[in-house]
Amino acid sequence: MKSHLSQSIEIPEGVTCTFENDFVKCKKGSIELTRHMHVPTIDVKMKDNKITLECKKGNKIEYKKIMTFQAHIKNLFKGLSEKFVYKLESANVHFPMSLKVEKEILIINNFLGEKVPRKAKILPNVQVKVAGNQITVESHDKAAAGQTAANFEQATKVTGRDRRIFQDGIYLTEKPGRTE
Image 1 (cartoon, rainbow, N blue to C red):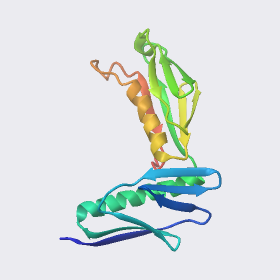
Image 2: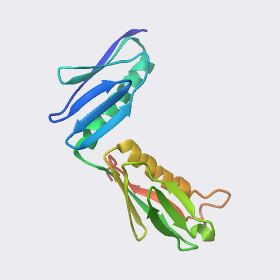
Image 3: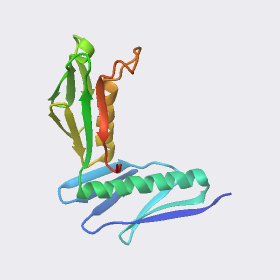
């Protein structure tokens, strides 16, 4: 059944937001984050220090999209005040691998004894620190930090071998929002 759907998000103090050409831009001090939000059936309005996501004739699919956009906007607000930190660990059983950051690429040498180094892309505005077998990925943009961590895991994915024996790779050990 089609119904009118609407969700409002309060803009925190000190944060300025604009919505132009399907991009939400939020700024606090020197930090500026943007997020592309294009769904033809959902209207984004900014009024009275609130962001309103609205759909005139929506069903549960539009409701899910509105709630997803609401979560993205809240992540933008959280990212303006603190960095999202992902921690990864490199594990090697057979061959000692070495990790090195060069510009926007993580270079993985001697993975499973391979002569050609593997490479993983580091997205813009993401800081990567390598200390021994510990890797720290941090950024104000949650999506960029998470994708960079996923790139590291994908670069060392082992295929065609028994995972119980070949446990080498880079694995996520800690991420924001997960409490253990």
